[in-house]
Length: 439
Image (cartoon, rainbow, N blue to C red; front, side, top):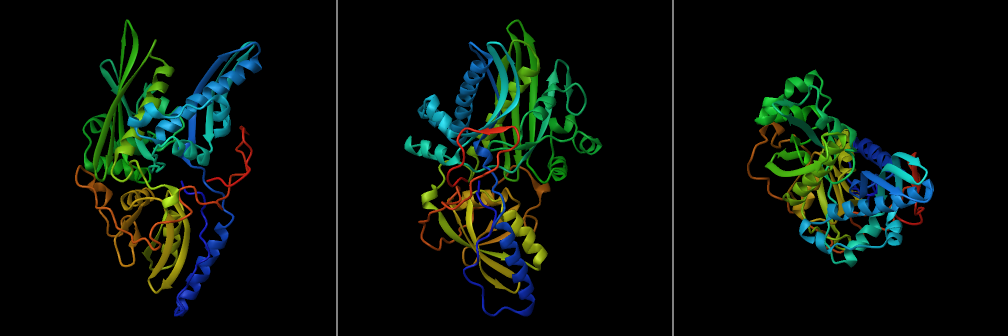
């Protein structure tokens, strides 16, 4: 995820600027200055939430420390598997507890219970992106940090002869609502289940969705890809089982994966484990998609791209700039020219053209080939509408023209001058206080 949300001082502005562009230029410069002090967004790929911890010790404090160490080992495994392909998991590095502690930036106690000699809790860990990248590079591993636009989860549960979505009981939906949907490669939104959702999507439509029903649901939640999460609960002599099928619908078609979890009984723990397993399926599908997979270019190979942005007025430019500020992996954006009806920018990105196209699309931007490298527009400006979502051929990747032949010193990490977060969210504690640049 990009480390900075401000735009650099432009290297060049065309000398022949019409009077109307003076206003545009002034507002654009004001926007650049206001973003110079904007706080960076922490990369969600390096955040692991809902890690259960439990340990015994001579005292409650000793048990808590042992539980934290065990929890950070679990969380590191999640991060390393999240960033790499499954075929590489057997070769992932296995650092000791001291090294792992140095990889953890901070942690948050979501909930805890401590008694003399025993500790139980749930933690969130944030890992230092630079140190994780270095760990994987030393192990010879390729990785990808590209994060999907939040998807819309439709949690359908079958228990015995009944199937539920919006009505009660639906412990499957409860588990998705209880989990943290803001971390990982594929963040999610769970619909409210209000009258609008009920009218847009019901159980029969979830079992046999059409492009129109998918589009109606997606439109209600900022255009995220709908994901039908079907789960079937069964009970037997060996305990309870949850069989899960995840289907993600995109403009290029649909992607599907299956998993299952087991537990002694059908309780909240079974469904929480099901959400964790389903998240793994979602992230695996995302990494296998066109332009999102591994490898991507390393930060050392960041290239400079020149992009043309057609704009009719300052409002349109401000809207596009806001979307550009959140594109994964973009660093050092600069305005190099303003003319009537368009703005030309350069930026650095450590990605091949296909990955770049997908990264832009996650922020509702369409990147297409054009004079000087490429053209960027908001989705919907002459692009295929969402209500045409159905299996088919994905759009071809653009071919932006590198200006500098490839070499660069900035990439997904934002470069050496990217600011490091200095404030710790409430309830969090630093293991490794900030001491240098951070994404």
